[in-house]
Image 1 (cartoon, helix red, strand yellow):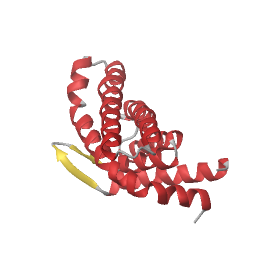
Image 2 (cartoon, helix red, strand yellow):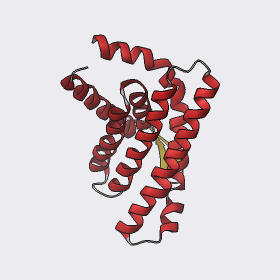
Image 3 (cartoon, helix red, strand yellow):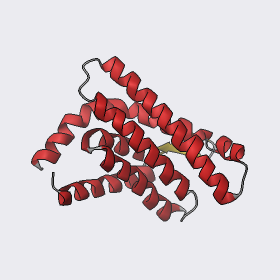
Length: 176
């Protein structure tokens, strides 16, 4: 795939991430909702590639934050999404051709939980602790909702990735 096509497809993914995040807000906790943009990030990590999927998650959250509340929260989310995209994306990539779907889902599920733990609880919380001059443990407690919500969406995205993978790769390789 040439560079212009890859950039264009990634740009479409970023737009989809923002639109799904803005338009389909499903509340699950007090002031927190399911971020359906993670469905796009997961499908891109699985079908378009780790780099593209990670960029979709990172820049998607940048645009979303700029639209909704400016810079508040953005650095931590960007770092978290970079880590989630890289780790989960490689798990998706290396399990794509596995015949045993149960094992594939277990490996990808573990990668999702681990990457989200590392991205949200560790990196996002640590960065926010430094930026906002708050105790690290306070930021961890504050990010529990984000961790649970993101893990749920990413795990529920696995069947969508499986369902859409061949179709998306066919569109990308042949064009519409």
